[in-house]
Image (cartoon, rainbow, N blue to C red; front, side):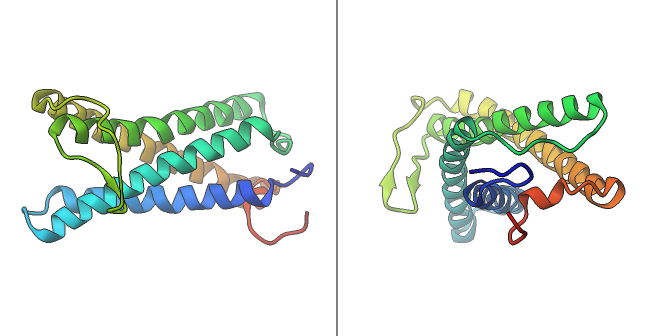
Length: 179
């Protein structure tokens, strides 16, 4: 159970696993996009897809956990900050699903199947349609940049609460600490 001031260990674990996976997938996505066609580029595209499917699965688990477990109470803050925090979190959850699903749809439309970790073939979300695939490539990229901006805002707000407000907000999602 969440305590009055901390998240559950599973919520904390899912938070940081998603954070690492999202940063890693974004970094690989940036790096691989401009590589010439090569075995390395193909390998990185597969890793990127695997990360995306993993992010999707972790996001579903995290959302299920969040819907069944009340978060700790927010520290006192101005109403506009509380509204901004709730809106940012809602948009993060939307992006956790929209970015990988748009990538999966793009991959399907371009005719590149996803085989999760090289073992589990996933069904195509769309029939092959290269023109739609190119549009979805742009959508996926825009959504990924949107997610990156939301992540930066989230980090900035957490650091502001930790270093300026000193209200203990960041400690709610840290490992260790007393429960």
